[in-house]
Image (cartoon, rainbow, N blue to C red; front, side, top):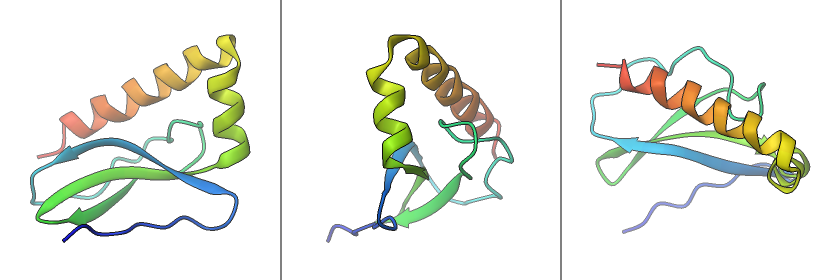
Length: 86
């Protein structure tokens, strides 16, 4: 059965990746928007790594070509930190 994740009004969930358990502490790096915290969500025996990002900021980030580079850098920073968890 699928698990549903919700974000507060005005926010969206940004998924970085999925790993196998066990979960260690989430990396202490900023999320894709440069500010949001990284969270681990147990989902059907796998761990989903995500952050809750203001929808307006995320939309602007992807809409503006210059900012898109920053989003890509933020995602690489987070996924690099996740790869060291273990």
